[in-house]
Amino acid sequence: MEGKKKYITAEELKKHNKPGDLWISIQGKVYNVSDWAKEHPGGEIPLLNLAGQDVTDAFIAYHPGTAWKYLDKFFTGYYLHDFQVSDVSKDYRRLVTEFSKMGMFETKGHVAFCSLASVAVMFAIVLYGVLRCDSVWAHLGAAMVLGMLWIQSTYVGHDSGHYQVMSSRGYNRLAQIITGNCLTGISIAWWKWTHNAHHIACNSLDYDPDLQHIPFFAVSSRFFNSLTSCFYGRKLNFDPLARFLISYQHLTFYPVMCVARVNLYLQTLLLLFSNRKVPDRAFNIMGILVFWTWFPLLLSYLPNWPERFMFVLTSFAVTSIQHIQFCLNHFSANVYVGPPNGNDWFEKQTSGTLDIACSPWMDWFFGGLQFQLEHHLFPRLPRCQLRKVSPVVKDLCKKHNLPYRSLSFWDANVSTIKTLRTAAMQARDVSNTAPKNLLWEAVNTHG
Image 1 (tube, rainbow, N blue to C red):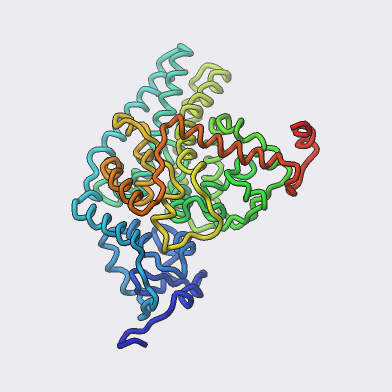
Image 2 (image 1 turned 180 degrees about the horizontal axis):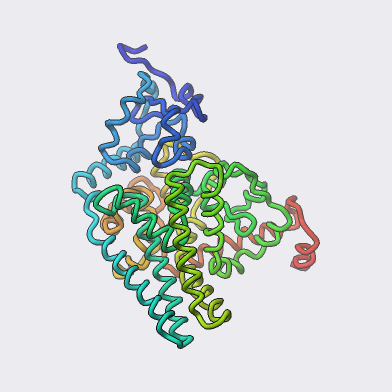
C-alpha cells in the first residue's frame, strides 16, 4: 500500500496471463478482462497475446478516445507499482494525440466511395466482357479486370475492418460482407481473426499467422525446429516434404502466389464451419454462398473449359500482385520468437515492417498499404492520411535510432527473394539435423 492506492508489481501482473485469469495494465491501472475477452470486438487472441502486461500503446493504437470510458468497469483497484513509460512511447502517444486533435482519424476523404464506384464499374465490365463478347481476347481482358476488382474490393474490406468507412456501423458491416465475402469469396470473419493477431504480434514466428506458411515457405531457419504455432495451436512440422519445398521456395514463390487464393478460400471454409466462435457466422456464410453462386455461373457462360481455365488462372495471376505485396511488407523484415511485448510496441512495428516507395498517383494501386509501418503504428488512420504522416514517422524513427525501411517495388521483391533463398540454402544444408527424404537427397547430393 502507498497512500490510499493498492499496487501490484509487473511480476505479479504476469501471473494473470491465461484464459479465465486475464489481466492487463493501461497507463498504470490494472484491469481484469477475463470475462470480457470473449466479447472483445477484436477477438480474444490479441488480449491473450498481451495478457499480463502493460498494453497502453496497443490500446491507444486500436481504440478511439470514446473507448476509455468503458474501462472503469474492469478496474481491479490495483495500480502497477513499477510503471514506466519509455521515451519512444511518450513520443508515439504524443503523435496519436496530435493526429486526433487535427481530426485526421475522422477525415476519410472520398476513398471508400471512389473505391466502391470503381469496383461497381469493373464488375459491369467483367459481365459485359463475358456475357456480350465472343472474343477470347475480350474474355482475357475481363479476367484481368476481375483480378483488379478483387484487389480494390479487398482494400475496401481492409479499410472497413480497421475503421468505419460508412455512415453507420450497420452499413460498415454490410460493406465488409459485400466487398469481402460476396465479391472475393474470402470471409471478413477469417480476415479479422488472422489480421488482428498479425498486427499485435507483427513478425513473431510463432504468434503471427502471416508468417506461418509451412510446408511451402519459411522466412527463417528457426522454422526448421518445428515451431509450435500459438495462433493455430499446432506444431508446424518441418518434415521431409517441407524441407524439399522450402529448398526451392525462392523459385516457387511467384507461381505459388498465382494460386494463393485457393488457400484463402480453403481457410475461409475451415473457419466458418469449425467449432470456433465466429462473429456473424450466418452473414458470413450467406456472403460466401453469394460468391460461389455468381462466380461459377459467370464461368459457365464461357464457351469451353480451356477458356474457363484461362479465365480463372488469369484473374488469380492478376490478384497475385496483392498477395506478393503483402509478403514484401514483412517477409524480409526482422523476425523474433515468442509473444509480443507491450512495452516495445513502436520498436516491434518498425522492426517487422517494410514500406514500398511509390508516386502519389499509385496510392490507389497499393491501397495505402505501401505505407506499412505507418499503417501498423496507426491502424485506425484512414489511408488518405498515411502519406501525410510518413515524414513524421520517419523523423521519429531517426530520433530513436530505429529502422525505417522504404524500398521500391522492385527492390522489395529482390529483398524478399534473397530472404527466401537464404532460408532455402539453409534447408538444403546436409548438416542440418532436420529429417530428409530420398527425393531431397537425390536432388541435392551434388549441391
